[in-house]
Image (cartoon, rainbow, N blue to C red; front, side):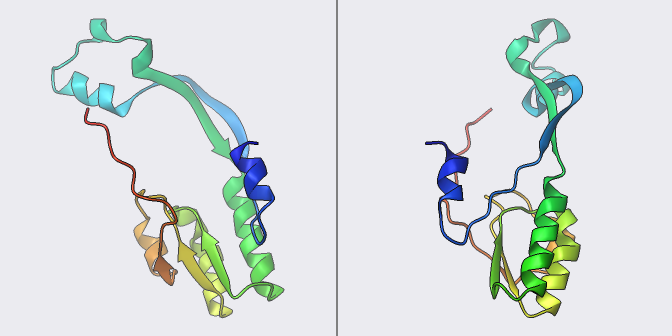
Length: 135
């Protein structure tokens, strides 16, 4: 069973998926950009594994924001765990906290937008911090 299917079977859990859209054909990886800028790699050295498809997930932030607002206004929860760090959730988090709902953030060890810190009640991760590969 896949991750999303497993999460959907869990109590008090909602999975919201957006739509994947093609933004650009291919995007140069950040590590490859750094190597080019540092002179460790030349344009001629670039290979297929230096690029990834230019895909972007759309519409999921709006769906999650609407869920937070709906759950809050219907008084269906006293705590919401938001797995993100995106500033797009500031309005929803602000509404929830104004209505007495606690917002706990799990950014999955990624950065958190400065604006979002003001509108959460804490940060807690349910996953161990991943070890980074050295570039």
